Amino acid sequence: MTQEKKQEFTRRLSCCNRGEMVVIIYDILFAYLDEGIQAKEAGDYPAFKNAVAHAQQVVCRLMDDLDFNYKIAGSLFAEYQFVNKLLSMAICKNTPQNLEDAKRVLKNLYDAFVEASHQDTSEPLMEHTQQVVAGMTYQKGCLTETLQGSENSRGFLA
Image (cartoon, rainbow, N blue to C red; front, top):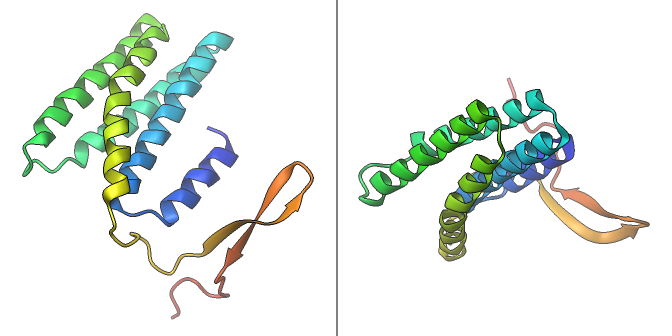
């Protein structure tokens, strides 16, 4: 994943609430799946294997975060296990078809979580973060972003 993409996800995570966080995790998963497909098309097996391994880590994170006090968690766990098996088969068979299948399975869940996140009105998870304002000034070919509320010491003061 490129450094620019990591910064985008970091920026989104710094101002998201609980519902949006799940959507961002899915976006990260889809980014790794796309990266794996592109690596396979380029014939770069180590990059393909690395991208799939990162995607598996994200799926494992989704499985670990399930709350089994809710009935739906069992169904989600089964789907995540299936996706994890698809990702393992992609590495074993060295084919991107399993990644496409995993994306297809996850797409319906993603759409449901996006809809649920629109209904979530909870507060952002992180407090005292900088706000990013984009579009105040423009430069040729790019959109500038400005950080507001920056302080000299944002950490612990001993």
